[in-house]
Length: 110
Image (cartoon, rainbow, N blue to C red):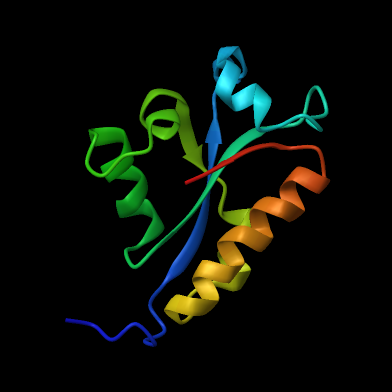
């Protein structure tokens, strides 16, 4: 089993379809959403982000919003940070979500 301090963890961002805004829970978590900005899911994983996205879409350890509304990965928003140790990825997941919300994105995090 891999050690948690190994440099193989990743943050990732998935673009969500506009229909996610119809979900009241998603809207409540994004009071500062700026109309016209993208909707995204921010996560972290020990897998390659492409594989993790495929698992979400297949319903394997999936976030409901990604499974139902996930369109594609947005590597331009996260590639610069990867890979990193486990604890750094945990922190970066939160920081990236906050930064995107501050820019007006609609964001969901697990």
